Length: 161
Image 1 (tube, rainbow, N blue to C red):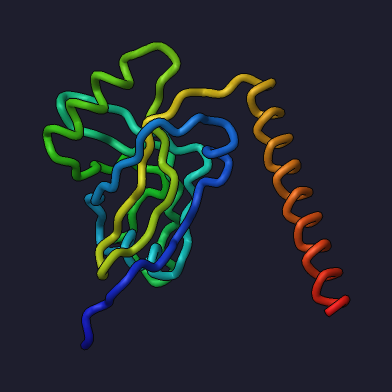
Image 2: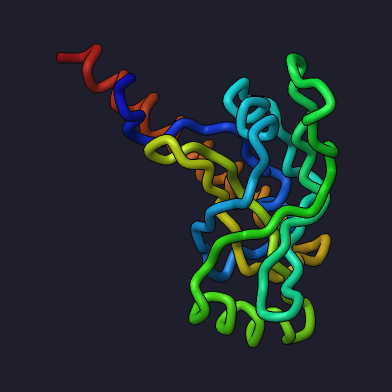
């Protein structure tokens, strides 16, 4: 059996990038059971309500939904159990000091397989206010309109040649 290479995306949390201002990102491994890994290999997971909590010098992932493996028996896992994240001590200390500041939280952004191992991308984030969200949407829309106008001008230029 050949070793897996590259990065295979399982799930993304697009809502997190909308609701939070991302300050810093980290890649962490996860402690999983066998049926969880099999369920993830089927591409089934949801990060929408997930968050990371630091407890006793360890990082724990809460509220991430990994559905039960369809072929599993009594060995199946609980769908929303808390899972331990594998980070080194310096990263945990940095996250602990930053997340203790007001308004900061740690949210999962993406779950994927990297070279055959399940990884999760977590981010230190600060919650956005409603007007910040509207401003971000307005900036995206303005950029999209600008790019459309530029490409339209380029198409007209090519048509004249």
